[in-house]
Image (cartoon, rainbow, N blue to C red):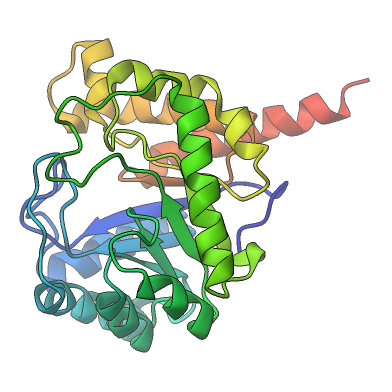
Length: 277
């Protein structure tokens, strides 16, 4: 379980989809999915996040039945063939998908809609006594990058997340099971993403563990003049190190090895800072 003030943890991404923005089609069969999960385990991942629906900008929704068909075999395979204990997160906005995943071994829910797409997912998290990640997203993946706009992005994201916390608490989710995600790249302009990264301490101060998901995101490519997501591993690791120093507790990444190093070094520096006389 992730706790505030403990060493941050790494959530490795396993997209069982044909069309995710960075790794779509790479791991959407059981064998390649299990091979990638094994690689992440060997590199020190703490949680594996499995999703059966792309949420890239402009993507169309995927039915519950199709998501279930994609994610259940890989979750079951990890549990029976690789690791019976590693925490597994189901990345979905649908309670039906989340319930099916929990039935075969998932241990937490990652909902990019923060419970807005399907409010029953909050009741499910409460009933099953599992953690849930509540993310901020302006609009839906299909429309979120159609001219997003904020007056004060940090304040607006905080207000939205506070509202989702209240909804989760009202549904019976205990406070210690709630994680918050500012939704970097989800209905955000480049300047919005940068503002959120520059003010991570304000999000951390909300009192709930923060998940940061910058991995291979397009806005970093515009800063680095890089066009391929695979070439943004270093940029991602930089944001991971900055997040550690700001108090972020969980990092969702494609590249475990490099971000493991970023966490280990940044955490050692942060601890040294605390002990300095």
